[in-house]
Image 1: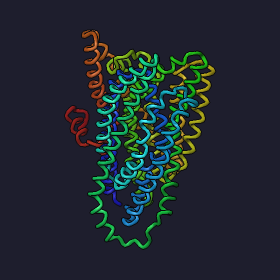
Image 2: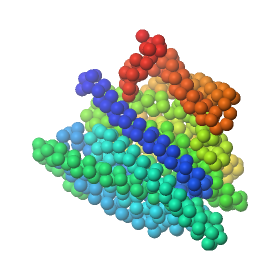
Image 3: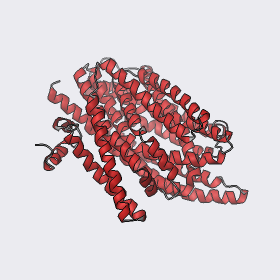
Image 4: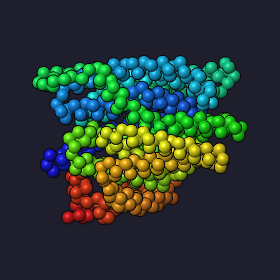
Length: 555
């Protein structure tokens, strides 16, 4: 493959990653928008029930099907590069069967195991109501993962992007309406029983009902799309002269061998909040403040983590696009293509993650005050302390994708287990021994990301004989982001001094973000962190070059 072809392939991976990234960020923004009225309806205690149910659901989803898009996309992209369309069809048949079986098993486990788990592991028994309502979503998502993986393996992220947006729109509408209706129902139950827990518990269950309905709409979209695509697939199968078609047993083994490392690695990421919730709830009970746990954890998960996850979504989307693209380069043993993709992925990820982390630090309190009507000063402090999570989790996510793309599936598993062990030790020390409370959880969470991305980066250098360009990838974006952060702070401060109240805060946040984007872009160009060649590799790079010329930042 010549340089022009490599650049086109690199551009396509970025374009597809950009499409999915935009969709993922939009989905997170929609999620943030609907969680605001939902949080205002069900409160921090309801948020704790919702978050606890969602975290346990996430673990079961990971074990059943979350890894299927990555596994299927790797298998399909490898067969596409060899033109083996009959094997692609065989992969899909086996994958659908796998999804049906795993989805059924874990749906039943969630439904019937909810009461035991929330009564014995996490001291939040009323969270079981929300999990039971959400449990059928696991079955739907298992099938949805198969179809998303198929189209990602075909190197198009558009179906996944569209389905995610549809899913989240339906989720948002149903969640808010159902939370309002069921919160009212729970309030009546509380009135009859003389309690104060059922309103928030049933309100949280209403939020989880939206998750189920959104997934059903997304699955319907894919069934219609795949039905239309089968005609094209059958034509390619007729022309395929592959001598041997893999058996269902062989494909199942491939799916499992590909999925299990991803499951273990990703589970380590997602089980953190579940373990932290359990440890923190027991800690709060040990100091006689079980009621305080619900409000603190609700603010932590429903406000702090909600905002942190928006920028991290970009790296997750880019990773999804990178895995099949890197797999193709790996199958073809094209090292130069792999290096180019790795370098571009790291650079683009940090271009986004570092300024987002700085912006969230500087504008933590104004953003929290703007989004939530309930008292959010504690959540603002969480965000200020823990905004570095964005950088390290973005970096660990994209480096996971790199290692998976070059078929080093077991390496992220090893690193995630080591990082999880370190995290749990730190939680015990900071929370139980030093009495740092929720701040000990936040610092330990950051430490997980630091350990993960550090070990991943060393492994990438080892397996690809690749030396990261630290100055352009990390140092210069950090310097530019710090300058941006200072200016954002003073812009917001100046606006709120002139215009008081919520209107001043709103205008201050909007103008601070707008000015910050311009300042960051100018600084990146002036410091040469963004030059013509770098911008040409980025999505909308041509427009960025023209903008830089108009601003007289480059010739």
